[in-house]
Length: 235
Image 1 (cartoon, rainbow, N blue to C red):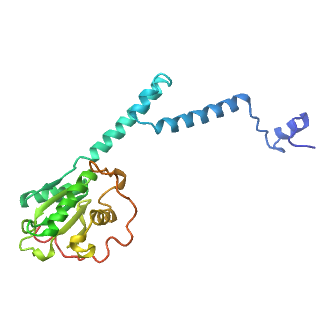
Image 2 (image 1 turned 135 degrees about the vertical axis):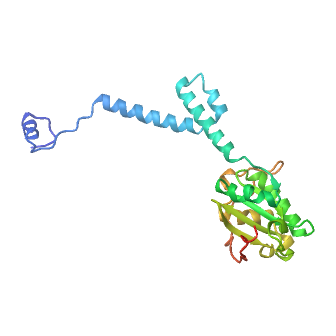
């Protein structure tokens, strides 16, 4: 006896639970499966298109489907624009610190540069941060004269970076010794910030007239050898 055969005896046995019920695949089942697969493939194809590419398909695709994906694209663009609302290194003074840094860091990453114009390394850091601010517009970059931020802060500790996120300080970089002083490159500072999570590589923009830089991971521990001080006092 073949339990798979469609016989009267097997039907009786199935009725009494002796044999399992047959699973019959109809032509409608095959059709529905093919339609579902085609819709999934079409959805994946349309999700990879930008607004201009969607516009080119208006004569070929269903208007309702295209409208859905167009609205999805617009929502994604708006969400990114809401994140990338900065774009420059901004000077702040002591009265601005609580609002521009402490409170603002609850909503976004903040990179603070304590500087003095008379120190060459500070000028170098300001140039790097100005460029990184253009590339990572979801991160807020500010600079403040060191003694306005922390009274009597020694010039020997400059430049100093304070990195804030989620309403708290997440990292401190004191001097550029670990990067070679005046031999420091922009990528050294970028990798340090990436190691903290302060900048998002997925949102990186190329500088005007410059191609995107190598986004490879840092060779070593980007936080290694960092000097820490309790800088919260006096801020």
